[in-house]
Length: 198
Image (cartoon, rainbow, N blue to C red; front, side):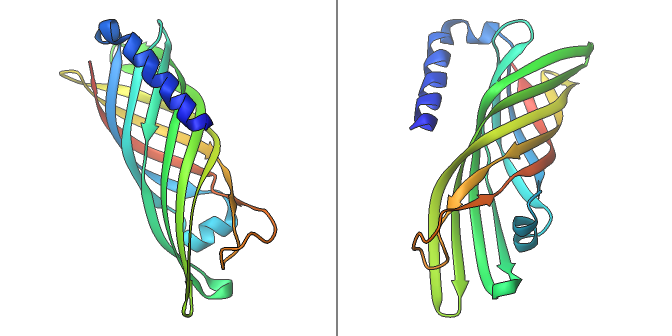
């Protein structure tokens, strides 16, 4: 419910400002990164680095403050060695929040940001002849830092490091809720994006 309301609010703001949207600084980019899980269980099951990619839109709100919205995707096959269970994880982390940009020189902007991180997770676990699937949403936060480097002709390079902190409820292996448990899918994200500045 909160996620839908947040996305509707952002869409409304963009529509109301559509008349002067492109009189503002607008950056549309496609990002690719390595997602590095910080939780030991998550990391051991799905290995140390996972490829993540997706678009991000950043819109100037006033001189230094910008709003951003992003949608990413990753998937990974893994294995829980202690119970000999194969697992496939698909995830779609979303993000909405604010960035603060500082012009370092004529070709470089440094930024930091904070936002909400809704995430959709789908898991498929197999053990012997039993297969169980789960789909669920979680909500956490994201911290962002990086720099935009002008490449000329309105193109830019975004070098960034993000950190998301997300815990989500999971059911047990057979799909029955026994005791509520929290899966920690918090991660560091290191990568680059290629963007266009309108």
